[in-house]
Length: 432
Image 1: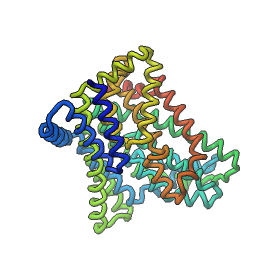
Image 2: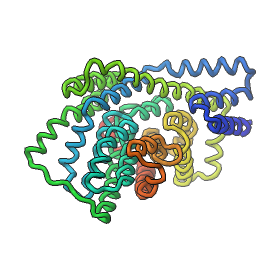
Image 3: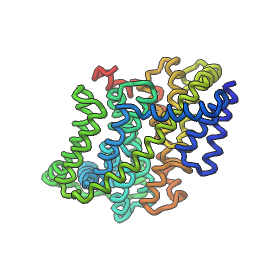
Image 4: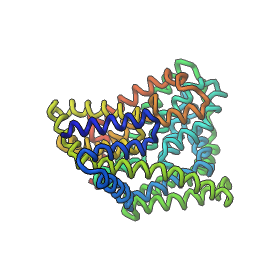
């Protein structure tokens, strides 16, 4: 029976997508069609509506609109420029210095804002013209910006880690946040290695070494922005406040910074709130329909059937993890990150727990997989944003993206099969 329901779920979803139905509604309608196999029409509709409504009745979820608002304020608050100037003081004189600046700025901005899209647009808008002026190829600059923007989804605070915590049934958000640091930094370093080799081969110029006085001047300018990470993550880890409370503190902090830097005025607040409302609405509708679909799959026993099918192929953890990674890489190409996490976490988490994997470790693996999908043609949202900011066609960016994809997959393999890279910090902070 479950096989029939899987077919209905998959094919109805693909048909709706091919008809250009918005993905949130495609997910909800596919779930409804699947539920109709077991229930009459009216109970199916009311059950889906009820599940969508109750899915949003969560204190944890209120962190997402607050972090989105903090990201919107940061986009206009002059934080990106100060982070870029600070990064230039650190790595500008190295081979591929401006590429390093792009990567580090995206890591810092993405981590502080929790948004890959915000990092790609804010940092790309400044760095692409700067790199082109210094002689860097435009497609290479865009490729660096696109791939490094995803690191902010692994380095906390990250909205998608909050979504994973919800989908997994309550994995500690604090533990997930702390677990993301080393994998996120490792991914950034891997991208920097490719950038360095590429820059040496192409003989791209380096920046001048700044004076000690100038270095400290830039550090002082960027310090308040960097302190946001300390305040938010530090407060969560020591138990001073929850992730939701931390998100509200992030809003107040970034708003104060915006006024102090004189980049935000009172008249800007309505437009910032409007953009936040639009983005939050999109995300929360995706959350509602995805959780409803996850419930339908659970009701129809689909995750258990898929789990049994995977485990029947092999009981070797290495083989199963290869299968799961390949499926998630494929899913990431065609599906946005939030629904992918909400739909596939209940399917794969029982499998990896059976294999003895920690849910925190699997969460980072899943997010890293889907990060690769965000910058992969044909549907990667960060790829579209990065190309749009750089005013390039996707075809022009694909060639310089290939070596960056390769190192991202190498990092994924390392994170997958060496769990202590992910779990060491949560153990140090006694979060697991």
